[in-house]
Image (cartoon, rainbow, N blue to C red; front, side, top):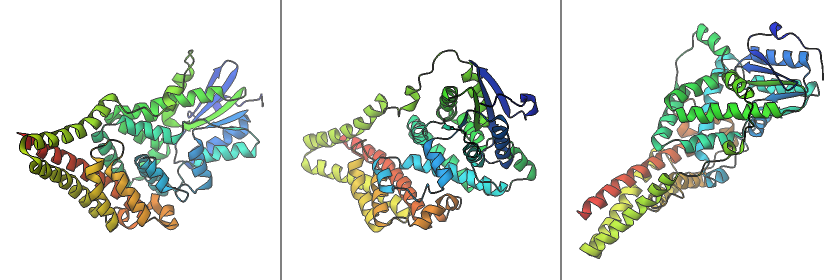
Length: 397
């Protein structure tokens, strides 16, 4: 370890020094779209020569930044089978928002994190990837929201992606000095506190614990500026933090399970009751109502997304069935069929993040169209479920 250290007063206010149990931790708060942050990170690593460099990345994000092959290597069918399409969509919206700002600033998003890793490698310093797996973070965030909160989140994300407002020079200067992603998360957190808990507070805890566990007596930790205050507070904790709880995907709530299985039981029970009291013909008529009420809106949703004809047919046929089970939604079935018959080509995978900022490209890019099919068919199925349930229950009386 290099025992000679530059005085903390010689560094900008973005750099914080924390001494814990004979360990010096230099916590560097950065903007995720900032060349000056990248330069500062390299300067500190080269001057301090720490035992370990910690970065606010997990293995997935580090691989995506360093190899730049994230979207090309997607196994869409497997992602849909694992029901992770919604988390991938969130990732796409966040990535597109950051990349759009990065273009205006002339800097690649995440450049300072990659610079930290590169500077560490060049100086033969071990690198510790200290962030929680992004897939766990996104799935915890998604699972924590209600249906309407999810819809609100996607609308907010789309608004940020499609926003055509030009940024003034003053605004660009302000953005350069901030951790843009954390700022956006903070705004979303104000609107939906559960998101702040998962996306910021939990990760502050996780990052602090991993930084504290890093090998060596001198550590340089590079994190987004929005995490600095929380990490400093967590580093002051004297009790041992158990990370297992925030490393798990929370199970479906009991209430959601009750509702998820309750609706099918009510619908099937109502149809059987109608058959018992009014005859088989009446039961058949109500079963047909259920099929049409679910199938038509779901198929229309797929049609609005310009889905493949087989996807539209699959949407119509699957919606009445998937609406009777919480195991899988019609949106996932439609997306899988769409991915099978019209898979995106490599060029479309490579351009997905850029294409997402223009509304028309969601229909022309085959990957983005799969997301549209997923959203529109899913919404159609939800509408159909409520309409069908209302009509059937009304017919009992």
